[in-house]
Amino acid sequence: MPIPRFLLRELDLLSNVGVEVVVVEEDGPASVSGVLAGDLIVAVNDHIVTSVDDVHRLTSDSGEESLLTLTVVRDGHKRNIDVRIAL
Image (cartoon, rainbow, N blue to C red; front, side, top):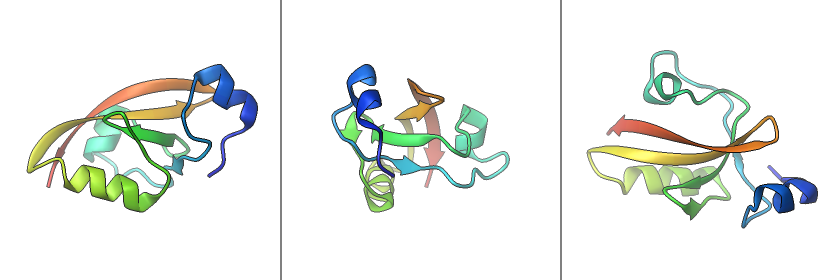
């Protein structure tokens, strides 16, 4: 999903594309950590993501049980959300 140019500058983002969270599984790791539908994931552990494939690759490369930091844009603000995943 494209990110408007003014937000790129304002939030100091390195890419103009992010991955929109469409569904968050109730009581799943993302939900428990505070990820919401509509969040735009722009990085995983400081690695820029531009596609769902990027997100899948970075989460699966993280190991059996890991703490990931998702950088998301929500309501025009950038925030980091720590998510503990178990593969």
